[in-house]
Length: 236
Image 1 (cartoon, rainbow, N blue to C red):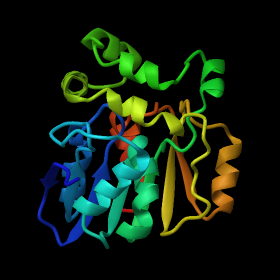
Image 2 (image 1 turned 90 degrees about the horizontal axis):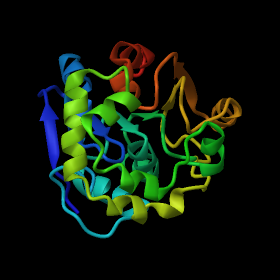
Image 3 (image 1 turned 180 degrees about the vertical axis):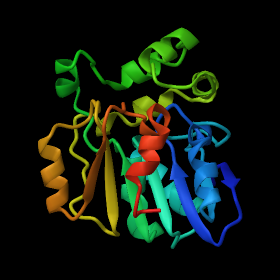
Image 4 (image 1 turned 45 degrees about the horizontal axis):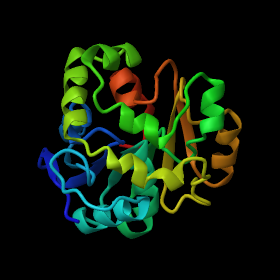
């Protein structure tokens, strides 16, 4: 499937941005212009079932194939958040960016571990979040700016909640790459519900650089934009 794509800038270097579940390219409203100001032509997709892209069957393999179908190979930089990080890792051997950044990637969505933190993460939980109100979104994300809350309301309205059910096999699975195919940074949220401390050592042993953004929640670029950009030092 060819995906809807939004572009910022017209620089000679190319950067790719891939959002997480329930969002679309607008989640990158600050990141896209910031990279464009650094000389990139920034391409941000809407994954299938999200934003202005088409609907259909859903699986991680199809999401990754869509990226290969839509985006140019050989970009200087690719950044994927959450589900977008997982999809990027599945497509990276074909997209072959010079550098890849995985921002709190959904490589290990473990419901049992999440329940220990009072959050039970299942496909049904994602699907049931579709009618969330502005107050609920702001309550879950107290560090977001109001514009991000409004955008999330609209992206939820457009989102096909069947994507969550199509992604059910990833819940409880260990999908972390066995190696870094290209130079790769993993950016963890300090308050991530996806990872425990021992994951850092495992990923470093597989060739990934790992950095943590202190104080940030899962959507780092919305929780702490300055911290998100600072953690990319040397990668952009």
